[in-house]
Length: 204
Figure (cartoon, rainbow, N blue to C red):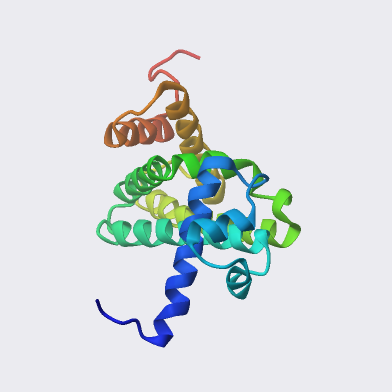
């Protein structure tokens, strides 16, 4: 067995704690989460846990930030492959977000209600900043689509918020109806975003 370097131990301990916290949050939610349970699940002393995280709020925020970091990296990498086609980029964003939800469904359902004031004003502000960053990223592709004549002229930021809300609506739909193919759902969601519910050729 390879002996760990001294410098590697803090990184591994931090990962163990975050992994344990995510697992327990997915099972029981924020309010029932106890740091004693996290320490036990991570196989570390409670005192060790406090060396890395000052309190429950800080720990949960880090778990959520790590998850969103992984989503952002995935979306960024996938959209680069279709940089010249803004509509393909939008479809990629939809696909990656739906796949992210499917992979982390239990955790996201348990933590959906704590993403603002319930875990503290500072944490709520940081999470809002992440949302603004994501919406701004999406709006960039909408601007490209408008410039290329692929989308009707509109406020790109409003369009990005609408797409984000639509993705979350489809997440709720999945919770109600059960799992559906992500590729098929992504195509359906993009059509709804691009064309709405109105019937073409309808008389005024």
